[in-house]
Image (cartoon, rainbow, N blue to C red):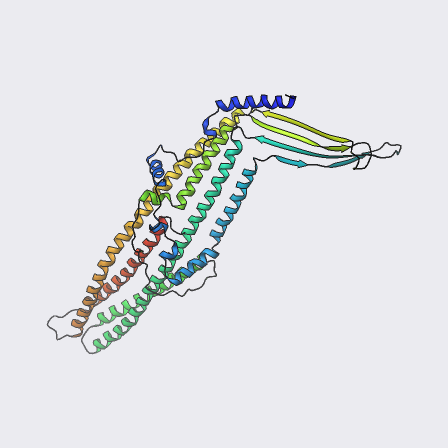
Length: 466
């Protein structure tokens, strides 16, 4: 065995001995921690087969079937700047991942040089040429390169999940804004129609006062209510304008008004079922991104552990040179050099200990953040389900109430306009009935919007948006 081979063998023995005494965490891939109930539930959920018919797994085109809304969502997914930045982050992470993988390969360097020397007396210059090629290869015995590669892969996956979360938020944001504009337009239409009717009512009150059927108080009250409605119309017009501009920003367009019909709503897809809650949460892109953040922290801790152990590097240098003043075609000779080095961190132990403590603390923080993200997601799904159920029941009640209030308005107006009737009513009762009828109509529109947005939010909280 030659001298170089002996050195390699000796270094390998030292490294092998150190490897047997090192912690297994350095080489182990990340697994979901099972110390907590949340971790155990997620591990079990991840092992189950995903239900393709669950709401969160449906493509958005099957949930939002309105062609106008579908076109707006497509525009937003094509033009939104936040989503474009998320895509660019994927490209950055992919480049970093490729760089980490290439760290396994040896590095090569070619450094040709030419020089000349001559004496002060003006003798003929003596030219020399060198074309050296050097190679360096770090043997990844203690997982330094391995953990960096795995961390880069986790970061790449995290950017993909983050982009999916942004995509889901954009789809939900456009849908919510679309139906909000539709509801506002419906309320605006109702208020304008009511204002026209009330304007006629004011004139009727004046005519009845002239005829002696009512007094000045009825005229004043009717006129005041008319201007109250006009004020509400101004507020609604402002809200409609702001909602249109918000939608424009989501679509990355200059502020403009969009052709959206009033009174639109969204129905829950047929066969809806919430599925297994934890299984649905495990598929959410933001939860998956948070899990990748936990993996990155885990690999950072592994890298900090690996820093305690020596690094083995094999180097090789070779090439040819000409030092006799001839042309390049007549080289003096070839040369080569092989070597191996084993570098141990003797004086950096204190820094390595501090770094390991810091990475362990950051890993615990990542675990806390991950578990909190899961709990927050569960709360969001629960809130969306509750809002859908309660608003569905509320719409049923308000629909009946609206019918009853319409009858109340007809009855009180009939009695008020017929002074000869056996049961006489005052204008205050008429005014109260009309106000209540308008209020319940507005509430019905709001509740319909709330139920629609609860469906959108439920789809988003279940990880929808593929």
